[in-house]
Length: 55
Figure 1 (tube, rainbow, N blue to C red):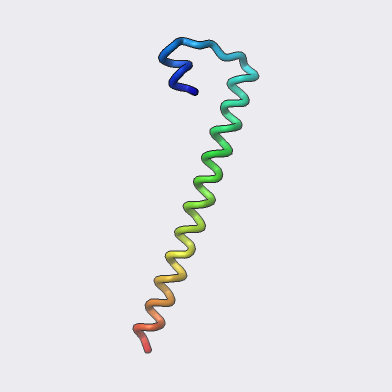
Figure 2: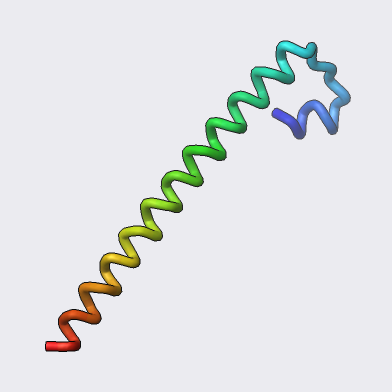
């Protein structure tokens, strides 16, 4: 969508810019939460591996 605005010089109203900002903010937050969850799972897996090796 932003590429269309840049390449074809489409104009957006302030309300449309606000809507686009909300959409991209939502996508960013969703990606951040997912990355955080994946990282937490990896940390747990590494701790479990360390416990197994210690035995």
